[in-house]
Structure formats: C-alpha cells, structure tokens
Length: 211
Image (cartoon, rainbow, N blue to C red; front, side, top):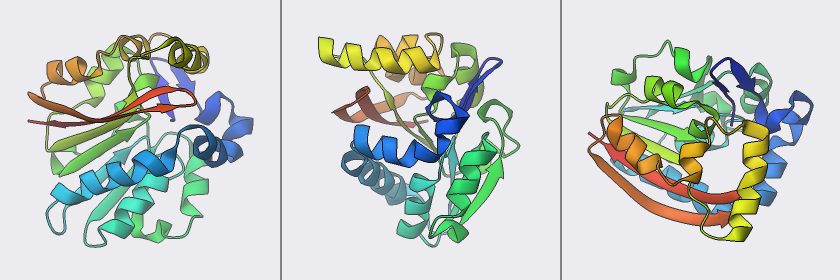
C-alpha cells in the first residue's frame, strides 16, 4: 500500500509512525487469509518454470515471500518506494528467496517486458489516473488486488476511511467500479474479475488481465 499519487507520497497506513503496525492492521481488517493464498496460487499457476514475477508496491513483502515459497524455481522481484517497509520485509523468514528493489511504481527501472507476471496488491488506488496508465504495461499477465465499488452503505462507509487517508484522486475510479474497464483501456483485452470479498475497509476485488 505504498506508492505516490502524483507528487504526494503515501506511506503505509498513511503515517510513517504507523508502519510497524502495517501487518497487524492488514491481518485484522482485510481478511488476508481469504484472498492472499488465492492470489498467490493464481499467479503461481501460469508462470513458466524459471519465470520472472514482479510485485510492484510490495509493502512488507508478505505476498512476494509467499509466491517465492510456492514457486522456488521462479525469480521473484519485489519493488516498493518506502525504505521502512522494505527493511521490515527483508527481515522476514523466506525473504532471501526474493530480490528486493527500492523504487516508485511510476519510475520502475525494471523492464516490464521481462516479467511473466506482474502483481499489484493494494497499489493502484494510491495512484492518480494518469499515473495508473504509466504503470500499467500490457505484457504477460497482470494480477491486481484492490478496492472495487462498495455495494452497500456499510462498505461505502468503510471505504470512506480509505479515501480519507489516500485521497479521492486515485480512489474515485475504484469507488465507481471502473477498475476492470480501466485495465481494458490500458491495453488488456481480457480482464477477469475472479474474486470479491468484504473487508473492514471496503470491497476488495481480485482481477487478472491478459493481452
């Protein structure tokens, strides 16, 4: 959940002093055990032996480390713009299986075309629309876990907290349910929403996009 929306950088949980609580807050509010394994397995299922997987906006590395454990033959690269969360990630068991890079989503030094799969988990809503388009490159498979349209008053109220912290510029399309449409416009003709669940901060969607 770390990235930059235009010139405004949003650290994990909105405030740097809360970074150490990141994993605990996500575990308590986002029902990670329901969707992270499903996302991990979806990514792992389609990457060729020895393939390359890039986790953009990797945060504290929970997903990247899980993917590397699931697919020890693959080269897993994790990128995040917050050095504090990267230090937390690199101290976790299994972190040695992942290649870590410090960098902003919109300024990636990695060649997107060299990746068999790219995953963006709770990243895109931090970016303004133009920044989203710069990040999205229609190469290989793109896996996205991010906020979708709230479907009832309780979810709308919960998502209002996300918008308060992360701003409305990047979250407006998510609140309107436009993420699949946005991915199609970015150059992915095949977009599948294969999961949706309620969390403490709104409705979370799992999406896979292919060229």
